[in-house]
Length: 243
Image (cartoon, rainbow, N blue to C red):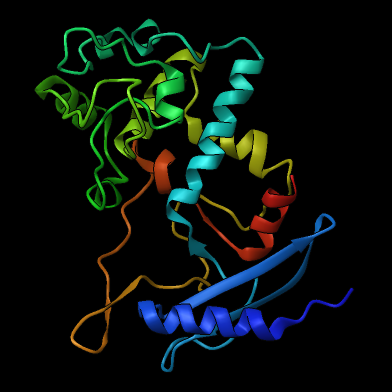
């Protein structure tokens, strides 16, 4: 059955105009393959944008980090309901301020139930967080919006904690596990944790005073990267969606 692209093009164009998006890339996956794809690009933006153009996917990265953690769970490397301090004793003090709150578990981090406060857009500016900087944040005491396991509270820093826990449990950075166990086997050859070395990638822009302004460069691959560090394409993401 042929896909009617008209409504899709109209929907994406309307969204891009309303939210001042310089470029929106989209694709439809059907029967295990990328069935159709397209894009909306504002005037003055690069030509030749298509399903092979690389862009950072921000928090869509979390699905990869969670899947890598579940692979380790399946192999007995860690358990989802273990307190995180079992894998890194330095995290024992990462607790909600309420006296009856349970310790944070691996499951809490993945499901956004740790209670750690929402931290957009701070986390995007600190993707390159080092171990020493991470330790200093934990030592100062983290802010909790609510007791652990009491409800949903979106936290990017929680995925930095997840990265530390996975590394202590497995001996490998979660980024390496994602690359070796997921990106590679799925043939996602255009997907990386750092800015591409080639030129076919979209520069970060924001709308300011009725004009596109270049954003500051995206930080490198550090401890917060498991929450939002992957760069990829629509074609590669179709492989992920299919899997």
